Image 1 (cartoon, rainbow, N blue to C red):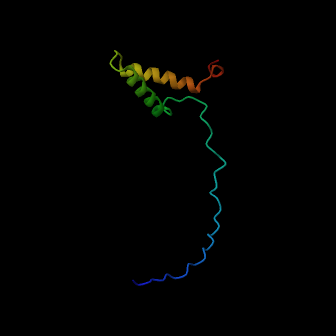
Image 2 (cartoon, rainbow, N blue to C red; image 1 turned 180 degrees about the vertical axis):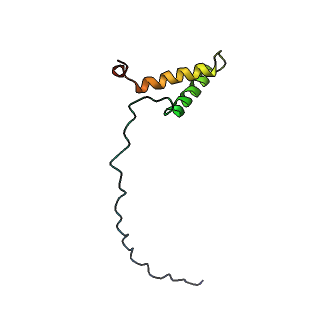
Image 3 (cartoon, helix red, strand yellow; image 1 turned 60 degrees about the horizontal axis):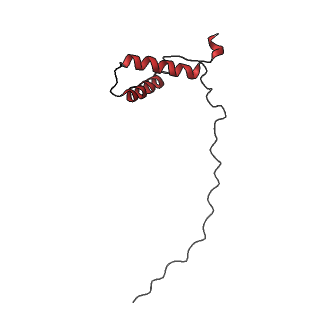
Length: 83
């Protein structure tokens, strides 16, 4: 049986120092106003959820959309903004 020899292992070279990723300190400002066109995707997702929950009960997609619009609007509009 032949004996194989391996080259002596090299000392591990230190990894080059990398600076950590910089996180932008200027995060986007939260949306404080309600805009139906700006929140259309969110309204569509809520309307879809309402449609799924409705299942086979009577109703229309328009009613689901209007309920979703009201639900999303309630998340952004406070009582003080209504006055």
